[in-house]
Length: 169
Image 1 (cartoon, rainbow, N blue to C red):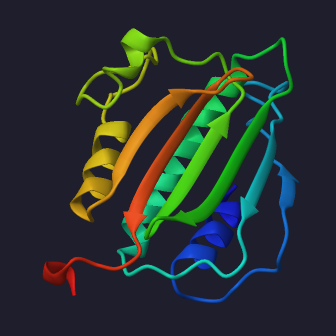
Image 2 (cartoon, rainbow, N blue to C red; image 1 turned 45 degrees about the vertical axis):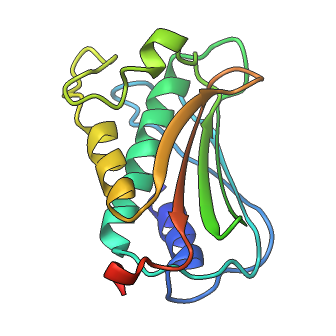
């Protein structure tokens, strides 16, 4: 999973460019906690994306948080394939990063609360990950939101402006 996060970050934030095309890898769960969970991780990165000026570590933290939440969501899934899909593309002068999971999904009431500090759906969660992630994204002029995935699960997306604001330059 760390290799995939690094690849996505390399692709979007300056460093080196990965090979073109989609990439798939299996992520093995910790066998002590759940030996059955082995979701398929896929990412689709549009070649030639414009690099953005941003704090690489903070954005890695956002991507990692969204991926870990997705892994937790698919761990509870038994009726469909366990998938985590990550994509990045440009639209209207923004970079859009999308993390989709095939987990149980979130109902409309929960979606309204998940970005609030200390709100959690996990038995041992702190309720800070999504709140901090949204703060990081919004501090750079972007947005972070969640919507139901039509085939089951949840889609988390965030945007970042391709051109920094005058105050950020």
